Length: 166
Image (tube, rainbow, N blue to C red; front, side, top):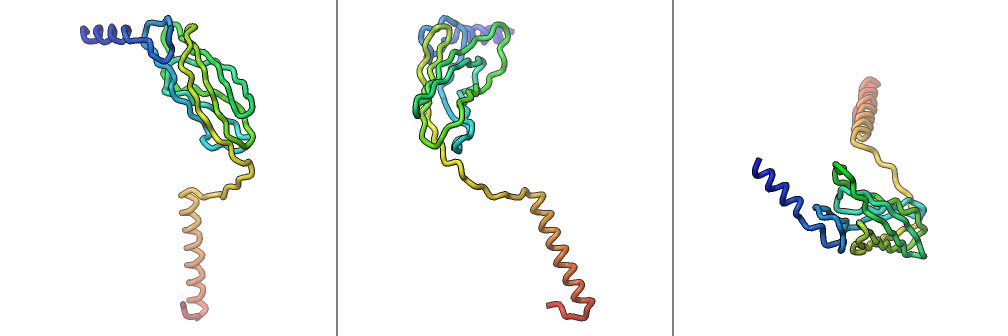
C-alpha cells in the first residue's frame, strides 16, 4: 500500500511536458509529437486522415485551412474532468486532394498555452491506378482441388475408352 501511495505521488508530481510551454495543468500529460497520414500514399480524390501520435488521453478539436499545397491545422487539446478515456491516436479528417505534394502544419494549444508546431507531408498520386484482383488462400485451395478433380476425371475417362494414358 505504501509503494502504491509513493507511485501515485510521483505520477502527480511529474512535469506537464515540454511541448506546451506555459500550460497551467500540473498533472502528468502527454502531448502529440508525431504526424502521419492514412492512407500513406493516397490517390487523387481519396480522403486523407492525419494521425496524431503517440496515443494520448485528450481529444483534439481542430479547424483546417488549405492554401495551395499547404494545409494549416489549428486545434486545441481538451482535458477531461474526472476519469479520462484510455489513450488513443487522434484522427483528423483532412479532405481529398488532387495529385501533388502537400505539407500539413499543425499548431495546437492546451489551456491557453501554445504547443510546439508539428509538420508532416504526403504525396497524392494519380487517380487512374488499376489493381489486379487476387484470391485468398481458401479460394486458391478450392480452385486447385477443382482443377485436380477435372484432371482425374479426364484420366479416368481415357482409361475406360481403351485409350492409353499418356
